[in-house]
Image (cartoon, rainbow, N blue to C red; front, side, top):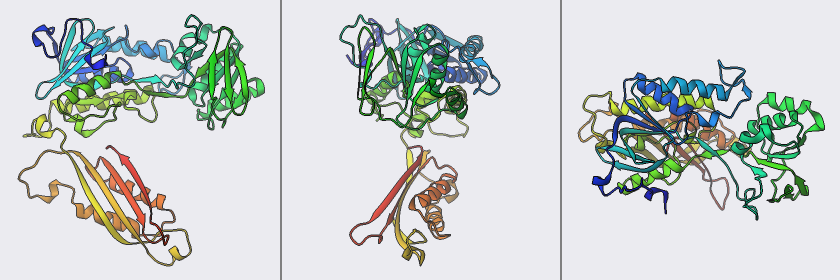
Length: 467
């Protein structure tokens, strides 16, 4: 049965007389990590009623087992993430105007135009909120190649993901241990396990991506840790009662006692899939995968915070900052700053985009000798995302909008002001300049060189910002 059809026992989204009496709040936050705690703190201090919903039995549950000291959270050097998680949880649980729902998985979501969000929790609880923040964090990547089910389910798990390794590494029997990955997590675990007597092999498909300090510590260990950067990943991983067989094109078949797959994380999709289903039922088109911030969802009172947004650099610090941003966005939705702002139903899905198509002129572009002799004909196609805009029926003031004549002139100026060798560099200049315009949320640019080859045209496109 799809997750979206699971309701608390005896509950149906269409039988409203069977629904529990919902708890009414201004903002509901799904998730209990640093981003959720940060958003809850700000919203409480802003005077808003908050419901914080976490399926684990405690806040910051994902940090509680990370007892190694860290030095990348400014102001908390030589402090473990577990200690930070305890501090965040203690502070949040003492907040006024906070309704805490711990150990309560989210079961079903409804969205009704003009009414907001209704969240059904296990067992038999409901929360009604005018705005919703998803702060559900990440889950480890588990490629099928490495996590095929063992023939005997009674065997101990010898192939682990990042969370499983963290949970057991302190008590893991020393042996020949393979770590797949080249980032901070893989490097830190390699150092930790080596110090506890493991014979560690660290294997990455690319160069090391970890902090330089960790790389230097690893190099100082010499050959006591087997390093395999820039090595194709194994093609087969299979475990049995005695260990794990790893097969690769470069190293053949090898045996290890333990294997940990530390290839990164992805946004936890569970809550988003429930929200997406709710929007689809209400007639609002929504992608099936976890989303980054989009202006059209803000008009529904829907926001994302922390690692759930699939940001490029997930960590405690960025999650805390994202929580602040999401809290202020929710406050702006609940307390519009402009008098006479239309209701959410009038703002919903009103994303405005400026399109310039087929703009042709001569540009100082190219690395070939003949391209340096004079301007080369190009074509530029551009889209400028202005995000959610108030629907305007009568307004003749050009100062209230982004003048597309200005967009056109910026494109021409950037392409003709000086000679640019590479088309890629020109795209970067255009994106940077257009993103600086007030109110621009995203830019898409395509530049076509019209006469570089006699039998075809060459084009490169770029996209930046929110779409």
